[in-house]
Amino acid sequence: MHRLISFLEAENNLSVKRLKQLYYTLSKISHPDSSGKNCREFILLNKEYEDALKILSIEKRIPSHKNENQYVGDPRSLVLKYLYQYSTRFHPPKNEYNENRFSERTFENVLKAAKNYYIETYELFKQYLEKIIKKFSTLSHNPISLEAHKSLLNSIPYLLYYLTYSMPHYKAICLSHLNNVDAVCNRSNTREFSDLLLRFSKWLHAQIEIRVYAPLGPMP
Image (cartoon, rainbow, N blue to C red; front, side, top):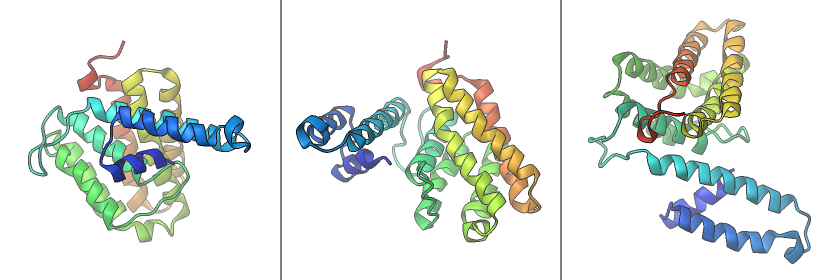
């Protein structure tokens, strides 16, 4: 998933224009009429192209930081931006959950942005980094907590899609994942993980209700 984004990152050219050029080139190669192959690869390419457009559309409209110590723009928007990047680039929908030092550094962007947001949000993410991400090897041996963690991460892209495009079906998918987090955590015996995951789920629920995504203005 997100092979197109990875290719653009390698070129250091994360632009919609370059994405369209790349898609046009690959579509000619993979189209059944020209390649003689079945349409599965072509369908997959179209899906990845749609996902990549969403990623670039969201990131283009969110203020970026000038350097690691100076963040500009709306604090909540930056928190959501880095949560989105963390969930989609390092935890794609194919269940390739590979926690490592790189993902730690990535989540630290969320933490830096949260310093300029509410102190409660900062403390939540700080605990999440210390108790979930840095202890993922322990979490991964707990199937119930791991399932809740995956559902939590899967909810984040749909939250951003809903806040950006205001389409109810994105909200429904996000809530479905979050409701699964709540259900799974409530039957867990490992309170160290489940209580923190429930708090994170509650925070994401609140973002749905706020609805307004500052760089795009109030949603209709």
